[in-house]
Structures are given as C-alpha cells and as structure tokens.
Image (cartoon, rainbow over all chains, first blue to last red; front, side, top):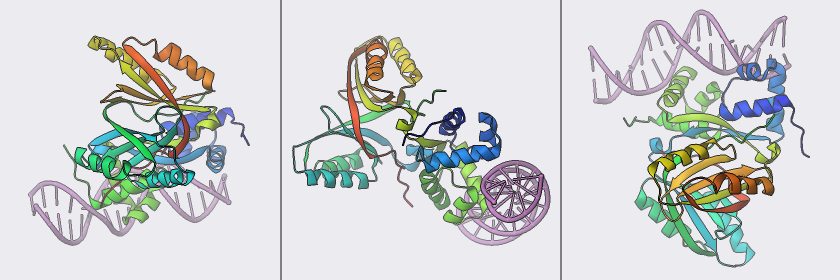
Length: 156
Length: 156
DNA sequence: AGTGAAATGACCATAAT
DNA sequence: ATTATGGTCATTTCACT
C-alpha cells in the first residue's frame, strides 16, 4: 500500500509543489534526471494519488471576494443521517474553499470567502446556522495572511 | 489598479484553478480561444499577480505526515516589535502549511502538519508556546477533510 | 533518438472607445 | 488614434514513443 519514494520522487515532489506548471524537461534538470524517466515518475506519482492534482493559486480579491473568514461550527448530538446531509451541504457551498472535521471544542472548521460583509452575513445566517444539527456558529475574519498555502515539507 | 477581467480571463481562471497543469493548447480549446491569445492572457494574469502561482497538491500522508491540525493562538498585549518577530518565526516553521491573523477571540490560526502526535507535541510545546508574546495555544486535530482546498468561484 | 504536438513570438485584423 | 480583443503563421521547444 505505502509506496516507497525514491530520492528522485522526493525531489520531484519538492519542486512541483513550488511550481506546479514547470515543464517536465526543466523539472528533469532540477532533479537530476533525464526527461523521460522524470516524466514516468511524475505520471506514477499522479497515478498513485500521491500528487492529487494541480491548482493555480488565484488572488481572491481580484475575483471580487473582499472577505475571507474561518467559521467554527459546533454540532448538537443528532442522528447520523443529519451529519451526512450537513457535510454534503457544506461541500456544495461555493463560498466554502476548504472544510475539515476537528477533534475538540469545535466540530467543524470552514474556510470561506465572500464578496462583502453583508453577503458573508447572509451566508452564515441563512445557510450555515439553519443547517440541521448545528448548535453554534462563530466566525473570525482574516485580517492578514501571515503564511499562504505552502508546500508539505519533503525530507531527503 | 483594479484590472478588468474579460470573459476569457474568467474562463481561464475557472479552468486553471481546477487543473493547474493543463496544456495551454487544451486550455485555449476549453475557453474558446486560439493558443496564442490564450497564452498571452495567462501570462498577463500571472504578471498582474492575479494568478499567484501553481502548486501540485500532495498527499501529506504519502510524505509521512500522519497528523494535521489547526492551532489557535492568543497573544498578550505586547510591544509591536515582538509581533513582527513572532510572524517571522511562524513563517519559518516548515510544519506550518498556512497561517492567518484573525479578528476575534483567537488572534492567529495556524494550519500545521506533523509526522506523529509526539512531534506535534514537540512543535506546539517547544516552538509555539515559547514564542514571545504568546498567551495561549490550543490545538485541534483534523479528523477528516470534508472539502479539500477548492477553487475561488469565478462568476461570468 | 525521432516525430508529432505544443509553446512562443512576430505580425495582422477587427471593433469599440 | 488608441486600446482591447483575437487570429495566423513560423520557429523553437517539448512530450512521448
């Protein structure tokens, strides 16, 4: 199950997390391989699900999303079916740019964007707080990004 | 300052957030442009900082990071200089895969990974709690990812 | 290593301002 | 006229066998 990662694989993963659009030939140069084996390894890493995909990181403000926030949700104890439906709903909201179930005080953390404070209010009031099984919703606006989404470290 | 986004730009942004490594020619086809103007637009979007970069999304577990957590930090009132040093330190930790300053109860949220619970403990105890200006540190482990890092919505 | 595909840059066309 | 849009073609570079 747990695939062994060669030193080349690790160098590929390190490099491609930093520049997901680097041409294979350039990547090959950086990791010290010829183009052909480098491409084979890259494809294998994708195939094995170790590389899950590639995304362009886009400035939310350029797309008109002035507000970014984290929403902390506490759940009531409730029938398991509700939980599933809640999760499906959360996944469906386009404002939700990431969402995790947590251990501890807070049950669910939602990373969200909104065009402005008003539409964020509409989102939390009408579309989060009204979800069945939700006991409490607290929001904190992002004031600044100290460190943007960053690579997972890759040891040698 | 605020660049106008053409319908083509929006289609490019929508597509490339979903597949950051799509070949330009394919991208051009999807957005209904010839390759050359498509590439010009893509480069301009990068140049203008609207596209901030490209990353491969890598499975943290494949790299040996069994633990993912959010850490909530409260600060003491303190001299402004401390704040700057704190932020620099946070940025420097490789365990920190994202970090934001928040408005509200919690001052800073840290998204972190660790190889195991022990090393996560070492990280919070020795490298977070000891930072000057930190009043309180609380951690919640990620139990499951409900929605992984997702695109910013792009309206037409 | 070779072949077909893709990236890239120079240049042209059209339309709206 | 100028700006913004997109297309065509020729050349280099790349992906993949």
